[in-house]
Amino acid sequence: AEAWRFESWAFVDIFNYFTHNLVSIPPPGFTDAAHRHGTLVLGTFIVEWEEGRQALEPLLRDPARRDRAAAQLARLAHHFRFDGWLVNIECALEAPSLVESMRVFVETLRDAMREKCGAESAPMVVWYDAVTTEGKLEWQDALTPKNSPFMRAAGSIF
Image (tube, rainbow, N blue to C red; front, side, top):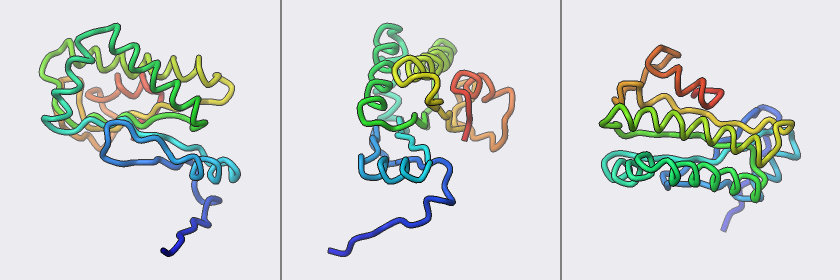
């Protein structure tokens, strides 16, 4: 098998490890290499389409479950020594209460990351611009009133 080696870390500020699995944890070798070159590393929490919506809604309807999930994601980042999460929700949220609970989840994750990983390490949570404050799957391609509450909860947006 051929080995592949990335040699351009000097040009990368943030590396996001992305798969289409619910939770994507960056491989430790990637994280170690990135950190040796001063690059931050993010894992991904992604929920897609109808199947994802069916998994996400019970979590958002139960505040205790939602908060445990955020805390567990922070524990994973701390354990595997990566710097934060891209939160990518690509399914409609059918009720206003779910939209607000999603915003709270993102804010809780940001706070849990700061608590678990230490604020001085500047842990990151990045909101992926897909779901609006109306619960629609509708990319804005800019910071707008329809996505800014999620950006404020996370601290950044992609």
